[in-house]
Each structure stands twice: as C-alpha cells, then as structure tokens.
Image 1: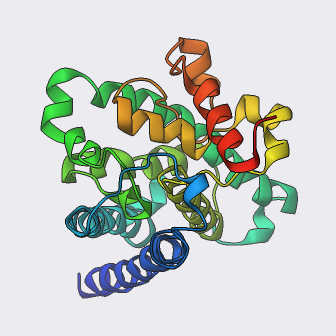
Image 2: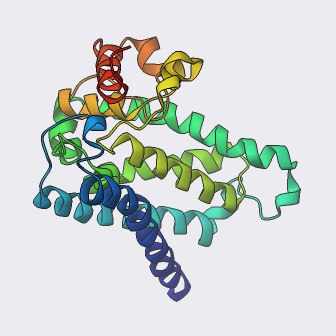
Length: 256
C-alpha cells in the first residue's frame, strides 16, 4: 500500500507539472504577453477573468488526481495482469508502437463523442458536465476542468484502451501527452491554424479551436474531441462552423 501511495504522489506531481507547463505556456503567450498582437486570432472578443482561471485550475487539479489514481491502478496493482500492457518495446514491431498511439487517439475520439453526448443529457449535464461548461469562453486552463464524476468517465478511457490494445507504458504516456496538447489547443480561445489548412483534406477530418469553442459558446453540437467525423456522420456539427471558421480566418489573414 505504501508503494501505491508513493506512486500516486509521484505521478500526480509529474502530471501537475505537465498541466502547468503545457497549459501555462500558451496561456502566458496569448493571454499575458501577446493579447494585442494575437487579437485577430481571438475567437470570442470578450475576456475571461481571474476567478474563471482559478476555478478552472482548481477543478483541473482534482481531475488530475482522478486520472493519476486510474493510471496507478492500471500500472502498479494486480489489475495490470488483466490488461494488455506489455513491458518490452521489442515484444511488438516498432511500427506498431508508433501506430498504437494513433489507435489510442482514434478509439478515444469515438469514446469521447458518445460519452460527451450522454453527458449533455439534461439530468447528467446538471449533475456533472455543467462544471466544464461554466467556461463559456474557454482558456488553456479549461482543458481538465471537470466535475469529479466526469473526471472518472474521462479517465476511464485508459481502462478501455489497455483492455483492448496491447500497449507499452511509454505509448500510454505519449497518448496522454498528445491528447492533452490537442485538448489545450481546443480550449485555447484563439485559432492558430495556418491559412492553407482550410483547403486541405485535413480540414474535413480534424477539429479546430473554433470547432470546440463553438461547443462552449452554444452548448450544443460539435461533440467530437480530435476529429469532425462522428459529428458529421451523426449530424451534430454546428451548421455555422465552417462559416465561423472562415470569418475568423478572414479576420486573421484578410478577406480572400
């Protein structure tokens, strides 16, 4: 038990540092150092205030603790023997190790879409998801700002992944880092995609900061995390998304 507590403290500490670094750097750049220069890229012109940021950080730290407990349970308790976690990178081809992170993102997007839609059920929304939606104008600190019960459902994706896919602990770590970086971008409050992005197939597949920002400001639609695919298949993408994205890019780069 002492070993488990030590791992919880260690991993929580590392994850907390990661949260403040990966969310803090873009926050400092866009919200403290360059707000005037980046103003054209700001999705909503209204400003969040200090109490919003403090609330988001507080809830994010609680969520981080939940994620840590789930990770420790999977890696350092007898539960690990029932998972498909493997120890030696050489147990699987190198190409699989790289693709396993991509597989995690694809599975997570599907899991997140349906979980997210469920959390928008009237009763569940008031019970849990309303905490995240207090941030109608999200910032990087919003990324992990969840009610404790929602944090459990968010973190449960790790349970799904390690019971379905053979995963090395390092690939799990890379997945969580990639996921968080994308999450920070989705909540950034600024659009940073280059001008050419709009005219590629990537625009048709990948979410943008505008995409998720619309979900926070309108509360409906745009339930996907990384990709537009499920929203487009299920008809839940905000009908104004492309128009809003183009409006902001025109604001950034000039009318095309």
